Image 1: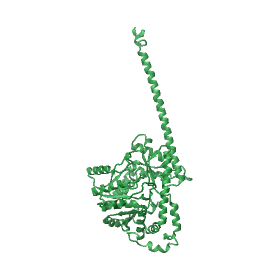
Image 2: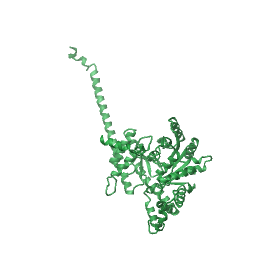
Image 3: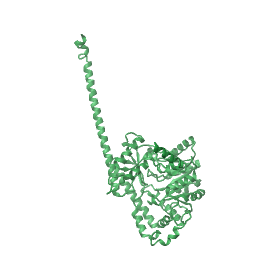
Image 4: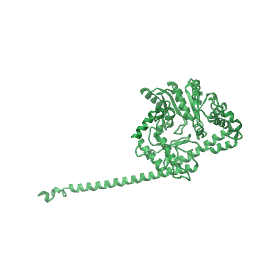
Length: 485
């Protein structure tokens, strides 16, 4: 009690933002990361450890990156070949970013979108990863207490990125498995009306395309419906497109920028894109986030706010050189797509062999696994109970759907691109064995229940025959001489 009292006194000396639970670190999503950190799998040093399948990271093409770095030493100011640029890059730079960096990022964004759209380098604002980009936009577009609509299921980090320090709320647009969790105009209208009834001011809609955790894409008709919806309500649209280059099968990725260019009468001041190099290139450690807004005022304000989360000029310098190498970029995009598709196919087909289905997807670094039939009952408590078994006994950190605000229990996100082939095979073997054992146990329970039911029926029939015998006139106890006497 004395320790708790002292801890409370210490917290009272700090700000409410610093001491509240807005970060979301206490969720099952982050608990899985902690379980991995305490017992990390290693092929030789710790083969019975927890395999990290809760981290959406693209590690399948680092050989291509490393090859480019070796062949282009001048791109880095920390090599003998590039040292002559050290002073120029190391001194103070304007927070607009290096012109060559913004130009290269704009060109890369065009390349990823099949050269069907163009991006103005002067509209690119840097931030510390997509996390910083989302928070920056939340500060620009909404006041504390205002809310953004977000289709479910959605990335758990959004609760931290948009809410924690801004005071902004996230209001769910409930999507369901009956239509593969598609975003519909009906669901958007219902969520908006519920927010209005609760006196919550909606300032925007946040969409994730390709979707994290579903790995699915929004088609052009859906994007048109979304743009029409936000225009009718006069609210902002924030499009998170950080997985744009992870598409490995048809249909192709369609950016909101492509739709906006085609729509007549669209208020482009309401359209904002969040991008990053963390997923498409696999550089989360570089903390390169991008805000691209069609709104001049937002670009100006966001650029001022970017002072709190700039990308180092050393990183800008290296990436400007890499992204400007169009031959390399074309090779990387094609090879990455092929490797992602192959890895996802190996995993999902392996699961299908033991009866585990996944939501059909063609993008992202993960898939949405359906374990509803393994739940003891259709509740989120049962989902978390199953998740704890998978974490602590099967030793796989997969993320439960409840942490993604999924409306239905039994779904799990599985990341597949953050490991080598042997680790992938180990993970697949573990989950297959677990499913087979669970099915075997369920079959045994079913047999026992059947046997028990048969035994009960036999006992019931035996007692019924005894009753019939006892109640027959010839055998009735009332005919006993003793009774008559």
